[in-house]
Image (tube, rainbow, N blue to C red; front, side, top):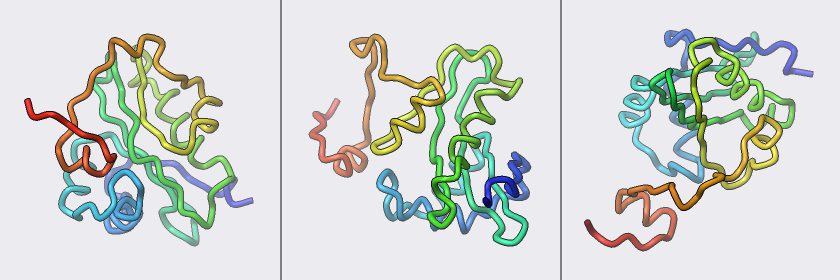
Length: 151
């Protein structure tokens, strides 16, 4: 089992930006994303990598947060060859248990296909969805197939 050999680290110097870019540009949420945009996202987030001694970086996740009341989990990715071993769950759990996020009242994320993974970590649909609002860029609305009226 490969998961036992995985080291999680938030050392920014260990993040393989090219590998992360390759993963994210093939994702359903950022298809074709530019390398410079991924670099900007990495620079503005608390990033975590999952590393295997022989295979290098095999996973990635990041959090955008004030580290006081709110945290947004984004771009959780596990290399396809090692999926199904709990690495993605470990990445998210690392943030949930991190002392810097101990006072965070709300962790949020969006997923199209991993509800069961996140439900096992305590995530659920918004309790008051009528309070949530979002503003999407035209580009992202197109990706989602949503119609957005200009402001």
